[in-house]
Amino acid sequence: MTANVTKTAARAAAIGLAGTALFQAALAGGVPWGAAAWGGLYEQLPAQLRVSSAISAVVLLAAAVLVLRRAGLWGSPSTPVRVLTWALVPLLALSALGNFASASRWENLLMGPVALLLSVLCVLVARSTVPSRRV
Image (cartoon, rainbow, N blue to C red; front, side, top):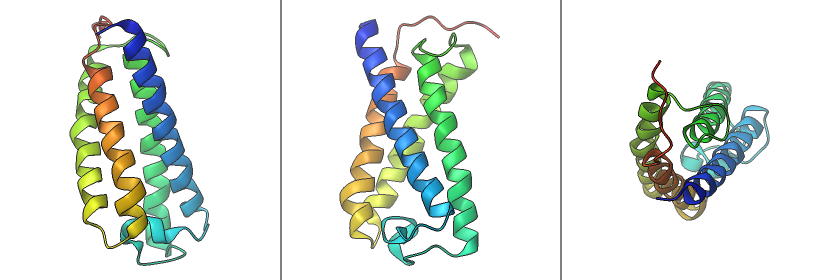
């Protein structure tokens, strides 16, 4: 795979992950978009799910940085970065499955496909030929 494909996939994945992080941060802040998250049971999330959304936002931002590092766009990739990038693939695929199985139409039609696309983009980044630096 060429470096351009890897970098484009990493940028797209980082934008998608950061966008999803912003969505989760908005939910944590009380924005009434709960129909599109956490099974769609609440318009405005209760306190426990707001905390979960805040944690999700942080994890998603870390994942965005991770894929940028793996592609060599933000610092140099290390062996742990490569391993963690591969770990994102099944996590995002499982997220897609959960979204597709949700009672929320927003999760079925928007969040599921987004998570699946992010999983595929992470495969492209993880398979990158950018050499990993030993830690």
